[in-house]
Image 1 (cartoon, rainbow over the protein chains, first blue to last red):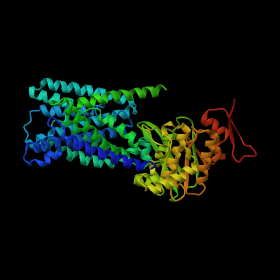
Image 2 (image 1 turned 45 degrees about the horizontal axis):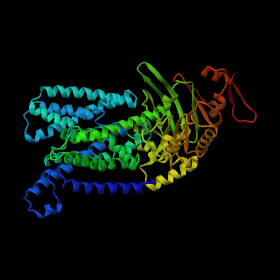
Image 3 (image 1 turned 90 degrees about the vertical axis):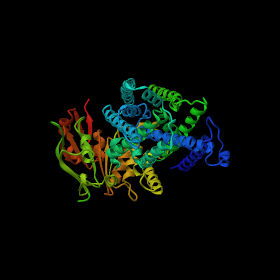
Image 4 (image 1 turned 120 degrees about the vertical axis):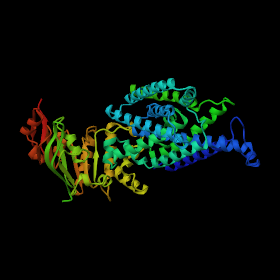
Amino acid sequence: MRVSLNRQTTLLIFIVLLVISAVAATQLGAMRLSLTEIWQQPFDSIVWQVWLTIRVPRVLLALLIGAALAVSGTIMQGLFRNPLADPGLLGISSGAGLMVALALLLPLQLPLFASLWLPVIAAFIGSLLVTALIFQLNKISQGQLSRLLLLGIAINALSGSLIGVLSWLSNDQQLRQLSLWGMGSLAQAQWSVVGICALIIIPTSLLLLRSARALNLLQLGEEDAFYSGLDVLRAQQCLLIGNALLVGTAVSFTGIIGFIGLVIPHLVRMAFGSDHRWLLPGSIIVGGLLLLLSDTLARTLVQPAEMPVGLLTSLLGAPWFFMLILKRLKASYA
Amino acid sequence: MHKTLTASRLGLQTGTRTLINPLDLTLKLGEFVTIMGPNGAGKSTLLRLLTGFLSPTTGECWLAGKPYSQWQRKQLAGQRAVMRQHNQLAFAMSAEEVIVLGISQYTMRRQRMIVDQVVALIGCQALCDRNYATLSGGEQQQIQLARVLAQLWKEDQPEGWLFLDEPTSALDLFHQQHLLRLLHRLTRTGKLMVCAVLHDVNLAATWSDRIVVIQQGALVADGSVQQVLTESQLTAWYQAELSVIQPASSSHPIVLLNK
């Protein structure tokens, strides 16, 4: 209450930053474009084509995937009441990945339309299965932080080895597809992909904004959330399904882009506090912004080649993860 | 009729184990009722049945003329609140944010009004801006009390059924007295019922209108302080050597452990 005006201003600043970065990012790349120049060229010129079919969808995809992963991280940390929860660390991304790999390798003859959706559906099923599994196991282990992460390690190991088996069985083209995708990249940005992602991610994120109060109440624990009038089971189911939709969509098109879901919620909490009514919109904006910046770096640092953005986010995020764990260790000994 | 919470033949079994033997209990608005009993007797389980968190395997619990199964969750939350022993938060929240958790459906103005009144009532103004996680156990209990009172707040006081599981466990003498006096005073208007699990027999003796005793999942006593707190009964329930004395200056007995 006391700081709500500041939060509004902060959110506004992030939105402005997002718009500026997005516009700037469409001009950067192997071929430098400037918006004023493009404007003077005829519509069917090469610069227009590059801008419209390569740059704009790439930027939009980065914003969408960044928002999806960040919202997913915020939801998982809130749902598990655990600041180390993250779709990658808990094995949800790799569970989705395993299903996508299966779908890629299955010799199915599908019409083009269906083949575009197949990985999304497979990834959704994979992430939903793993989320539900982790959630149940987490209840048995009474929500202990370290045990939750051990579960994640086990699931990551399992799906990693199964993906390994699948790659061994795959042909050259499938293998390349699998390994690129395992590193996480936004290089697949086409309008069709952006369209499907937008169709799933935008409504899901907006619907999840309505779960902010439920997430706040869940911070008291399930029993006290019940006493405060929350339909706990229903809220948890909605959050799990929404989360699986976001992670599944992100993973099926861009592979495993790690640590966005871990780092963003922490950054957003620093700016907005722990109220999910601010955390969720904050995650959408800051998540999109950060993945856009990372991706722009990834494709301009080593021009004319580009590195997979998943490598970059891992390089930046892993030390952060390390720091978080060290902080917890220190706190538990103090 | 609508001022009572009625449990009839309320019982809970899991598999072959009986956790709560079917029991009858009535809680009225305006009462201060204490639930007592030895460790592991089933006090917390009974509380979870009376608050509707657990569904009984036999019998039913009616609140204000309606069984729990027919209550809307949100409406129920405005009538019945529960303060439990431990509340740990994973993320940094200010004490005030914790208090408003239960009333965030209201307008900002109404939230502000309720919080101001509750905080003044409990006297925890100094804690509001602090990080909940850095508060002491006793200070956290005060904030949790503020949260549940806010949840039940109507015009100018909390109304409805308030359940507390050992609300004084982390409080010093001053705050024990302050909290129980406050709750007792709030029940006198006849609009609030307080049902607390208390371990301290003397606190129960001082403030209760009625004491309910649970032993091995069965209700073994339900009566006034004088009826329940007798030397022979307490010795039998708790297996402890103790004396009950009735000072001339006091309306309620004092229980002492023998050396």
